[in-house]
Image (tube, rainbow over all chains, first blue to last red; front, side, top):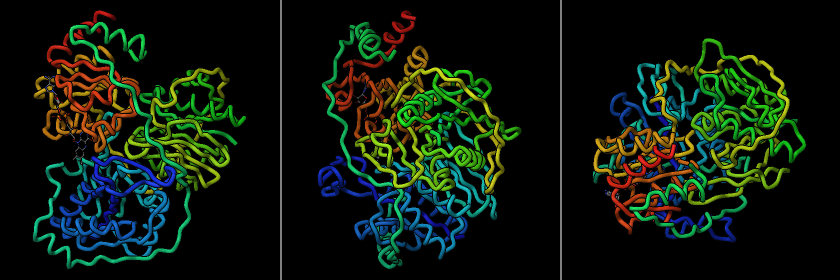
Length: 248
Length: 316
Ligand SMILES: Cc1cc2nc3c(=O)[nH]c(=O)nc-3n(C[C@H](O)[C@H](O)[C@H](O)COP(=O)(O)OP(=O)(O)OC[C@H]3O[C@@H](n4cnc5c(N)ncnc54)[C@H](O)[C@@H]3O)c2cc1C
């Protein structure tokens, strides 16, 4: 079984978000990058399948050389090889187009994308990719079990979850629950050493079309100071919520 | 040409998000001088839609196959988009809406813009503001296609009544094209979900243990609110993962968010920031949440929350 895990390199969750060039470009100066958390749950599940089913795990990222440390980390976690598609994508649709050209050459049985990335929050790569490939997609995937070509899966939605059957090949959108936080693999020294020897292939893609363009960014307006209410005066809070904020 | 909104329902009843989508779609249809078309599945009572300006409803009966099925839904909606020549399609920001949007965009060769928070500032081409960096920023995106699908962040437009005369059309439920089938659905509870809720009451590590969650649940009950929690609370198993909100959990965009014993770490705030009004109850006046909140009480949750719940009960 061949598994492809699509990895997005995103700003660390504690990052302050700033923009430059007249608010048209995200300022990466001083920002730490990490594996997108949703992708990391998927990668861990893939490594388990490598151990239980002898699966071969490839990680891929669309990005310039700045995302290589992230791919090396994935290799240290246990992926067998990495591919970097050497371009800076401008929207999710473009990422999908680049991944589709890769999938026209290499065949994968299971393709894992994070449910969404924590930078642009598109949540679109998995669904678009599967639909282009005419294979099924399961978003918000919190359980996966493979026997032969048959899959048992679970999807979380607002206020519940559902059990799903499907067959390979498939694309899933991974998130917490597929594996637990405590199960995430922290690379050890041996893994880090081995990662240096593992193949990291760089592909130069042909240009593909865009479907959206980001024109400008802005930060939420500064909010005023909090209005404190005395703990002994709860009626005042209720009054404010009812008559000032009008939310109850 | 038309504007099309995809309306969600539960047990035949249209969800509030559906009415918000209709209100939003009506505004755009008026701006553009177009009709507003809606698509829904297994809707039993559609009469409310003519209070929210919908001109035409395609209601799809799914027969035996009662579960949301992204493939069959998107096949069916794609047919309707083409028949009606819809140029702007609006889906909700629920898990189902955001599952549907990208799939639909490929099937209909449309641009897809998620997390939209306003009506477009420009129509040709469509230009619209949306949330990004998990609510730490906004961006304005332009569609480069003739047809655009957007997912509207819940509670970002609100409800707006406008009378219309509703035409009802039944539409065929299209067949499956890929091998994926929902076998069963397990609703967590009858409670309102975080995505649908107008009010969310959230508890953090300050509540000390799962046995104290009655404080959160009782308060949520008087307010008709959904319950949520911080990440460590779900990681320790005090509460189910489905309640974890924040940057790596569920987003919250309610009208009122009440945080009890939550410190207000940047990852927590990122996920809940698009809530309109934030209230914090924390015994540490230095807790970062006070910087993000609209109203706050510095006090012990074990003392404040029962009193607050009691007073809200009496108010009813
Ligand atoms: C990669 C990453 C992703 C993350 N994603 C998320 C996320 O999505 N969501 C999230 O929530 N966190 C997330 N976190 C964790 C985050 O950094 C914080 O650790 C977490 O939000 C803290 O949870 P808490 O506020 O419940 O606990 P604490 O920070 O321990 O705060 C407890 C608060 O309760 C108060 N308190 C104590 N006793 C009382 C009392 N009797 N009455 C009133 N108040 C009391 C304390 O003053 C304190 O402020 C993430 C962290 C990382 C590294």
